[in-house]
Image (cartoon, rainbow, N blue to C red; front, side, top):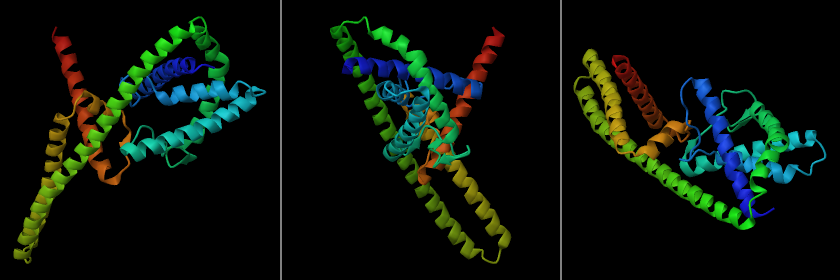
Length: 277
């Protein structure tokens, strides 16, 4: 099998995976949910899984072997992809921690079984039609198309990787800024507490004001950081499930909530304007 043909299949299956993932999650959340970590409409993990399914499972003796191979293979692919993206970018795009029989939230039994059935669908249902798309193409046309798709895909990957790296830099800077301001306020709180050690009520009021200050400064720094992010970075914040790095998880969760409120507020404003018209 020629490399250019495999890459075209990879892109086609990645697009189909994005359509499935986005449709499923949008219906589940009852709102548009653009899935995938890349800018373009594709989820590479589906493309990789489907192409491996075609290459490795076509020669298996029956559908039972295909199911087992796809179930086990998808588990390995999901786990390694989740582990690699978390190590590189500290972010995760799926988390099965709330589902039974999961392993570190990266894979779970029900999803692996589902991908086993998906292997059947790809091999016996979809691929005969996908292969007909590339079969009539001359080899040089396939190579040119694969090069164009590869250029777009590589540029997307590079831009996404840079945006994720910048997000981590911004999260780190935001945490340092908040910690510095809180430390200054905390030193003042300690000093006031020592002076008013016998005045329990005053000390309690000061402690409450410190907690309010922490929350207020966090909100202000989060909004300031979000205002410096471009569209790609804010989209990545929305599509990521969480940042598992403990120091990032709280601040990243706060950012996701602010983005969610902003989106709902924009929709409500647009609906109100439409009603007035």
